[in-house]
Length: 149
Image (cartoon, rainbow, N blue to C red):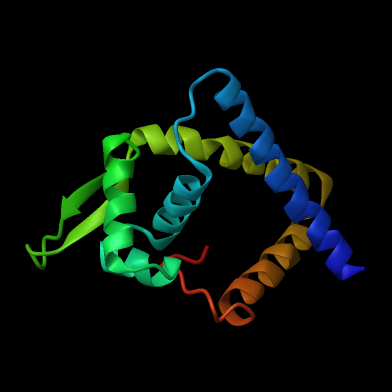
């Protein structure tokens, strides 16, 4: 029961995202390949990683990661920002062009979460937040993110 419920919610978020991406493709607005989309998702989730950090999480070689990063920079979805601490190091920063693309799924998430807050009591929403935070913080140790909300 829990598996089916979680799977349904996760699948609906994915399907909504894919619908919106295909709309952009039909309008000739999307220029990211599937692999590039996954790369950008990883980079965004890691919050301005270095190329080496991206390569490690994506489980690809540094030269392959550098190649993918350079293509994303050429397409305008990514830029490099020099580290203030170590001038030899550069961080990968999604551009506004990517954020417009990315917000396809987050606009829908905002809509759904507003509906959750309207439908359920504050106590129920607080319990859902507690469960989700515990899941992210304690039950998913394989994935580390800098920000856990």
